[in-house]
Amino acid sequence: MGPYSCSVGARRHTFSSLRELMAKATPHRSGDVLAGIAAHSDEERAAAQACLADVPLRTFIDEPLIAYETDEVTRLIVDTHDAGAFAPLASLSVGEFRDWLLDYDTTGEELKSVARGVTPEMASAVSKLMGNQDLVLVAQKRRVVTRFRGTLGLPGRLSVRLQPNHPTDDARGIVASIIDGLLYGCGDAVIGINPATDSADSAEDLIRLLDSLITRYEIPTQSCVLAHVTTQMEVIRRGAPVDLVFQSVAGTEAANRSFGIDLGMLAEAKSAALSLHRGTLGENLMYFETGQGSALSAAANHGVDQQTCEARAYAVARHYDPLLVNSVVGFIGPEYLYDGKQIIRAGLEDHFCGKLLGLPMGMDVCYTNHAQADQDDMDTLLTLLGVAGCNFIMGVPGADDVMLGYQSTSFHDRHYLRQALGLRPAPEFEAWLMRMQILDNGGALRRIADGHPLLEYGGA
Image (cartoon, rainbow, N blue to C red):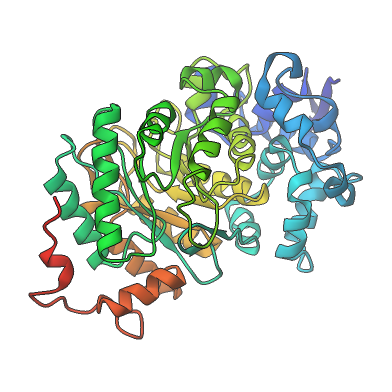
């Protein structure tokens, strides 16, 4: 289909395909410039956005941006599309869809009812017509609740992944970070370690370490060692106590192939983890990470803008009913998101698109030291995501990941949002924190006295 045309003033702009129109309508970012697909001027971008507003949503079903025959992610999107859920939206254009999302009378329950009818491309398209406040407003309507050993995503709650990475996987260093994080009330989303080496032996040792600590103190949370999915399946075969299965995923078959995965492998991993029956409240046990620029960095974007490729990754994640999904929004570097302004915008887009598709969306609010960003930018994004109803953030000692070498959010940041926005931990974890005299009945941190049970832990 196409071409698509729109006039701005006396000048007429023409876009040869829906793929080009989507790329040109995207707010400015360095990754699309690097790919050679960005708008050449603000005028061209405005023309593309005006043109995109008139495109019927049905066009995204009829005109896949990446061919059905050559890409299994496209096949997943098309083959699992729910026509019944789409029916209330079927007559709308992208611009009318935006109006409907922002309408006072459109509720979170209505967003939930249409989620399986919304394709990633539809979500990406409408986000390109929205300001930052629009992305916040719609996302906060949509609550996505998941369960394993706790209940995540409830209104008024914000969970934290406790991220105790260590550059040599030293058990004592990891345990010290975990105890520190727990004493700050963090860890209800997951205690998740990025291992320094991707070996089954190391992964198994770390999983058993985490399981020992969680079991001893009866902590209503889950553990994860973020090794490659094949490593985690090997550890499951060995009989290790695996809670969540992790994998980074992308929005095209070729990009996922560069990660060494395909959709069948993810299904196999989920089945293996389910066979362990380790959840107490539910069976959401997959954990996925994504990030704008991953497809382009693998030369696997097919000329599609990086934000739409990112939204397509959410279709992959959604298929496996995950407990947790997060974008590591500023981690890939300034080649893809140059500065704080671009990182903030991308974080809000990712959270919005994930929630619109029905994902339990969190965010690694982060940047690398060679990006034009600083902690003030991250504080701004953190606050916006708190207002938007983000399911979880990262808790990194001092906000500085010494193993991965990037800046994220600290254990203290949850308490900033608790005080500013009244956000509390998952209910089961909150009750545990009170039993352990880490939080008082009002949710404030207690002063930890010598002899506290966690300070006596010697399991490392």
